[in-house]
Image (cartoon, rainbow, N blue to C red; front, side, top):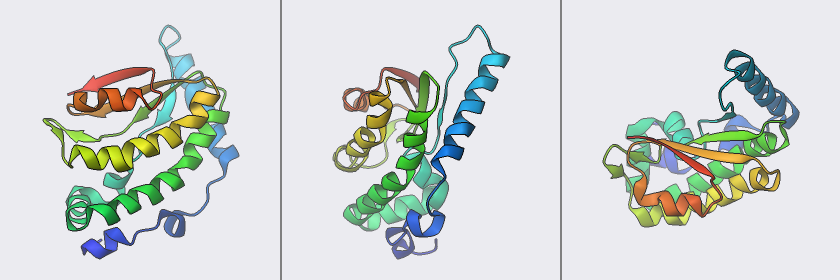
Amino acid sequence: FKEPEDVLNFDPWKVYGEKDIRKLKTEFEEHYKKACMEYPDAVNMTGIYVTCISGLIDIFGWEMLLVGAGADPEKFGEVTNRYASWIQQYFDALAEADVPVVMVHDDIVWTQGPFLHPDWYRKYVFPNYKKLLAPLIESKKKIMFTSDGNYTVFIDDIAACGVHGFVLEP
């Protein structure tokens, strides 16, 4: 990604394609079972680190993410929606997996708080969270949310998406 247009035209379905939900489900279950064996007295879980913003950071890197978002916040929102529709496959697999607790990690802020305008998150991130988390909620999973940085400005928004608990990593 060298230009903002590269970011704004990105389509994860074209680049990464469809995933095998059964394989993902098995991988989540194996991860959970291993954690239970290694830490039998802990509250064990499996989960996902590339929920929404973290996934875009991983794909574009910080600089190009910020350049793309700054160049055209609306088009970057559309990229976010496309990415969320693609990552939904992982959430569907988590919902089918035989695991009681799911950790959703998404670095949506920096140390001091949001790096994009809060309205942008409320338009593009949290509606996608509701869609992503819906199958987990329907399957009666407990959902924990983690983000590095200070995301307290968004606690109510995230809770409204169906999250049961929070891990704060300021």
